[in-house]
Image (cartoon, rainbow, N blue to C red):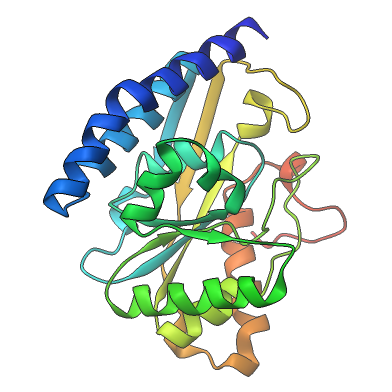
Length: 243
């Protein structure tokens, strides 16, 4: 509880003290690259203060020079900073509540991050179409196909929207397994437990090889890849995992 409060305070202070000046600089120069790097440094600082140690595998599988959607499983609030801190520059599709945070929300909008209103189907569809255009322009994304954090750490059902987005844009999907993050920050509690998190990047899947009618096959292939990097207690119940 004390560690969680410390990390929250330090992160918010960092956003104000470091983020605000670079937000002004981005507004003046119309360039958000430095602002983005400040954000990544903040994510790494939060992980360090939390006592999180990353064990990363598969960095050589990151596709360079082509738009991709990095799709990790989602166990806890530790997932976004843990994953984005090891990736090349990406945009993020995130729930709209994050965009209400002072300084951070404005910075996310400047950078091109896309808010998702999960309660409004029309706005959610519009967010997907906006992301398709960004992908076609060569921008990569980080997005969670489960849509929300797993209550028990086990892999949940995937939403179809991200896969429709990938197929429409002809983008690569890079499955990412985040294992152990629930133990660090369990959903439903205000607590942080220091520990090791394993991030595994898998072989990219070319969504251009699938039609919209074949999106279920694309979903299944992505799920199978992510499952390979998870522990048995993180697998969904009654879902076999091939070796």
